[in-house]
Length: 99
Image (cartoon, rainbow, N blue to C red; front, side, top):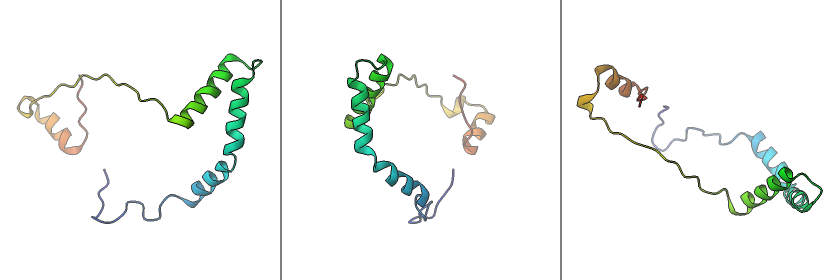
């Protein structure tokens, strides 16, 4: 992991100008894109998958994507139970337990 001096940005130039230009250009079509999605969603002749995707896209843009639930089991291992190799891997930032 990179270390930065306190008070110094890791990216002093900011986001590349090209990305900002593309975002700005794409945002010029926001209204048309939303109207297109709404038209697809309302089109009874459109494939159900296309209508569903359009509806989902509209909801995601209007309300954000729904929160996802993550189920995880966390086990703690005492450092005294770890091997020297595991401890050294932690120091190097490479440790990934097998369980």
